[in-house]
Length: 91
Image (cartoon, rainbow, N blue to C red; front, side):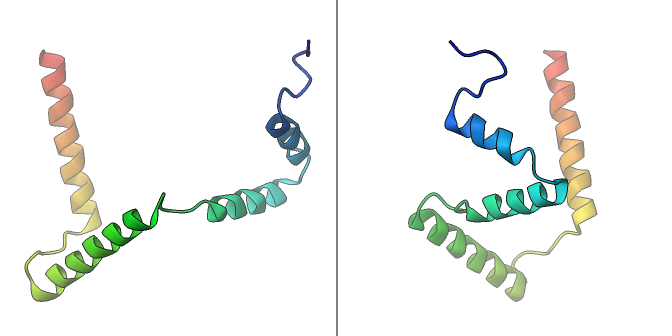
């Protein structure tokens, strides 16, 4: 039986060792670990997103859609969220 101070898995033991690194080394390690994780679970997902991005770029270029400034988009989302919160409080 292990005590609470003993690592319970290889991951726990590794983490305990990594905690001894300097903060800057831990940040560098975290960045490298994040970069090592694939953005997409499979090739089909990556291709599907690429098609959406290509379509959206074309829509912007040909004027089918109008870009919205970031701060305006955030404001609209916040207003919509507030409406949803108010509606859920009324129920």
